[in-house]
Amino acid sequence: MDGSPGSRAALVHALRDAARRDASVEVVAAYAPPEYWMPLYGPPAISLDEIRAGIRQNAAEFVQGVTDQLEEVLPHVPTVTITAVTSGAADALVDAAKGADLLVVGSRGHGGFSSLVLGSVSLQCVLHAPCPVTVVRPTVSEEATAPAAVEPEPAVG
Image 1 (cartoon, rainbow, N blue to C red):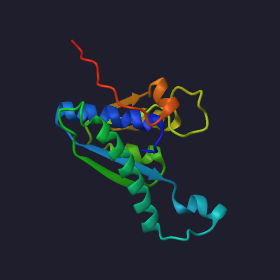
Image 2: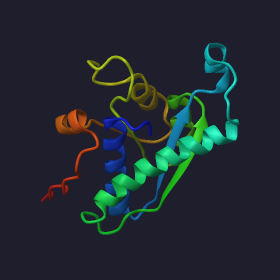
Image 3: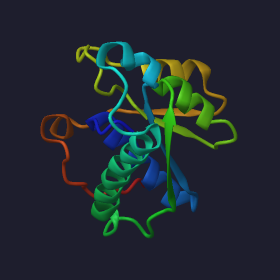
Image 4: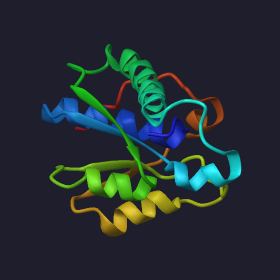
């Protein structure tokens, strides 16, 4: 979960799928370890525990916004747990997928190459996850106006 339109689309898909299968959802928010950014910015003014709590809180607010929009279109909102991990995103997601039924990722996040159809994290997940992977692309309107309203899923028949 990085707050991008791709991660939002992945969360919506995961929640809809979990509601259909009566499963739970684990949201993973990965962030760069301090040794990655400390040479540039110096030691943080707050503790590493506070950084982790802040990242987890941001993810929780993002998840709450999405689940609030889905309450009217889902039979029930699945249980969601949020984990903040000091790691690269791909490693964190592949690790979290151990024992999972499904890993759902956005096609691309906040990376710098918007022309790519598949980002580096989603590619690594497809190649290395120990379970099936679903890669979800946001709609054009979600990319342009995130966060976008959630439309009811069309019936398949």
